[in-house]
Image (cartoon, rainbow, N blue to C red):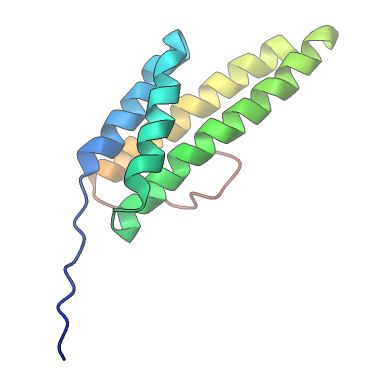
Length: 116
């Protein structure tokens, strides 16, 4: 029998909303949790190019937590304060880069990276 498989088109608007929630979350904190939950929900039902964005968003969340824990531990030697600034810049760059590729309907390049 012939099975017709539909190409998943995905909705890039949801990924865009997650990036915006992440950027707002730098000020509020709460919207980051909402964003990562949305990324987990929409990841499985999206095409491959869009899935890289959701995977990158999930990775940004968990790596941000890890980097923040390290920065908190290093506050006692005063370098932690500088690391918080570096983490914020890293967070913004990853989100803006994601928005750029999302507008071009391209996959997030090297979405498994630990850096920018």
